[in-house]
Length: 80
Image (cartoon, rainbow, N blue to C red):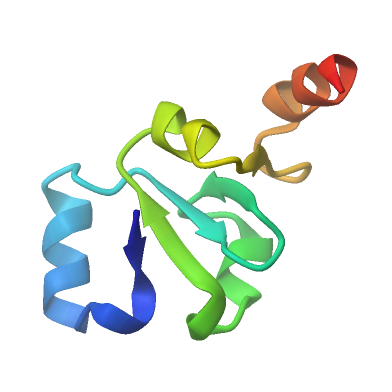
């Protein structure tokens, strides 16, 4: 997991372009979603984290976003 506040613009762009970052998340709410999610784009930089995979996010205790990952969210909700 990488924290947005620890990354510069160039480093972040490079990680995304190389596929090292595939998902974003909110560390306060423990939610992860796509990098293009409108909810994720509105969150404060201090709360934003990045993941290399869905497995990483789930392992760290994050749940899927109900806006951009609706199918995964429904599966998660059924399991809880």
